[in-house]
Image 1 (cartoon, rainbow, N blue to C red):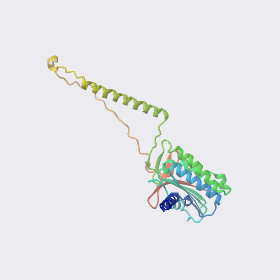
Image 2: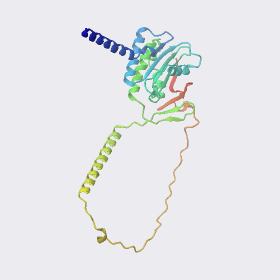
Image 3: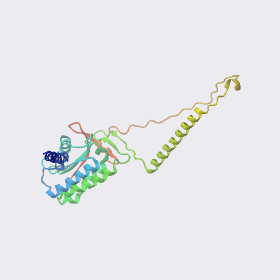
Image 4: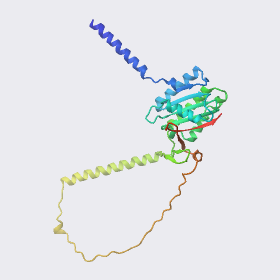
Amino acid sequence: MVKRIVRILICLLLFVLLFSQFALAENYSKYIIDDAKVLDSESIEALESKIEELHKKHNIAVVLTTSNVVPYGKTVEFTDDLYENGGYGFDGAKSGIAYLIDFNNREIHISTAGRMIGILNDARIDKLLYAGDSYLSDKQYGKTMLSMLDMLDDFVKKGVVEGGYIYDEQTGEIIGGPHKVLGGNEIIIALVAAIFVFVVLVFFVNRSYNLKYNTYNYNIENNVSVEMIDTQDVFLREEVTRTRRPKNTSGGSGGGSRSSGSGSRSHTSSGGTSFGGGSRKF
């Protein structure tokens, strides 16, 4: 009887553990929204696998969507709202991207959120938008998206480019950065400096302990005499340094003025979330 109860309990425990694994597993099918019905089952399966890989490698969310009902001129808002209202993102910053093929406006748009705004600057966004362009011309939309995801993987591995910054696309104002990347020589110099400081600290600590146990008292009163004869204050020279104040060049320019180089454009959605990204026609 006891053995039977133990067996039942073990079976129940195994069932609970197995069920919990399925419950905790992420359902990556929700990251592909093919409202335009242009993706076959094989493409969807391959895309889900790649999205899962990107999540596990970089902790980012990737949403792929197609639509033929986006209102005219609302491609950006549609993509932003899709990501924001869908509750996507795995970290506190909700880092990730949403990629939309909009057949109504004949436009491809990428929205970036969280740390992906800084990683995907304007130059990288442009490359992602044109990734798999030959497949797009042949209406092989699944392969187009896979080409984009492969390039995205490479960009995230490389991280934020040196000197990268985030700017408001309406005002041109820099709101984040620039990002500094240490080179090999700089890292070596920093390590050498740290070792030197450590050695100096150890030397002085050891010296202080030696003095503590080997104290020598010098009789100042009997061995030193001081006599003040005269004091004078002598004016040597006056030195004036002038520094030119740089003019403010960041204000008043439109968002397009900073679209090249290392910058990442940014805007605020209707829901109050900061997004980056870019679009192209097809």
